[in-house]
Image (tube, rainbow, N blue to C red; front, side):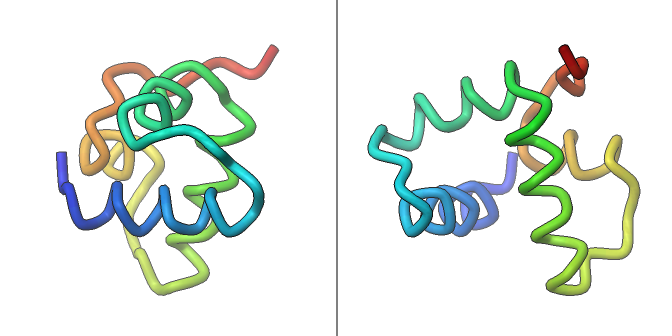
Length: 68
């Protein structure tokens, strides 16, 4: 897991109203497809060139959350 990436994503989430800590945010990334997809879109906009699977590995998500 790339801690700097997690902290950047958490900072973005907080700027959008997220109120919990980093550990809770990591759990959310692991369980909420909408949040995972939003954060993947964010890093792609910033120039991240790799797949969702690579992004999941980068942020320590074991299984990409399934859309409910």
